Amino acid sequence: MNKKKDSFLVNRIKSVGFAFKGAYLLITTEASLKVQFIIGCFMTILGFYAGISATEWCIQILVIALIMAIEGVNTTIEEIADFIHPEHHPKIGLIKDLAAGAVFIVAIAAVVIGCIIYIPKIF
View: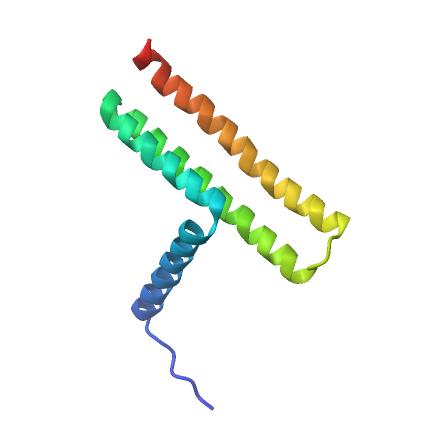
């Protein structure tokens, strides 16, 4: 049975749709991502209030996106691990801890970057 292949453009549009759906699911269903989204919104408002520079905006946007993206990867790893081995297993626990550790490292970096940007504006 021959299946007609979609054009390059149609495939790209479908890919964007799948990516949008994934981002929407992350933001609407994952508690930690909801918190990070709210913090990102707060930091955006604070950026307008503090009058940060274009360079600081770029860094802030990248950090917000990075932390939300790495949280999405962490969630994906947890979902795969739970699918492969639903019962508690030490190796699965280790895998989940390592993924959470990656999020923690980026979160610490985000706090440090936030301090570098905002402390001079506050004091």
